[in-house]
Length: 119
Image 1 (cartoon, rainbow, N blue to C red):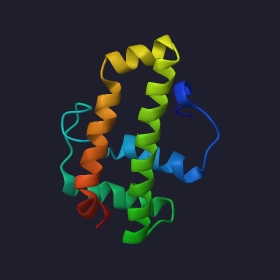
Image 2: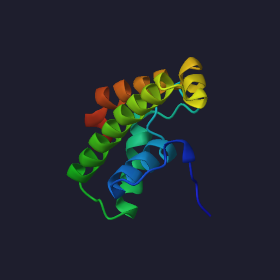
Image 3: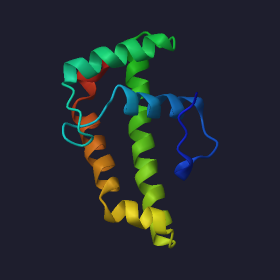
Image 4: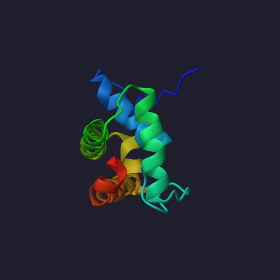
């Protein structure tokens, strides 16, 4: 089994894939953005389990993954906006529906709670 999102599929560093997986499955989202409100302490616990499963066992490893997750969200918002501006109907619809705003909210949340999340 696999989870594949073809909208933004392209080659990239493995750490980007891992950071996006953590973002989605821990989840590392701000309260209210995805419908599942997970407290920061629980997100930190889940992130520690997630990263340990991949051999990233230190707070420094978690900090690195969180930094990459933030970079990934910035890149995703930029990509969405570029595609929408180029006339891609799907991305224009996503932006009109506020998907980019969700990612920006989550980015601000990760920045604000980075210390608690990395442990």
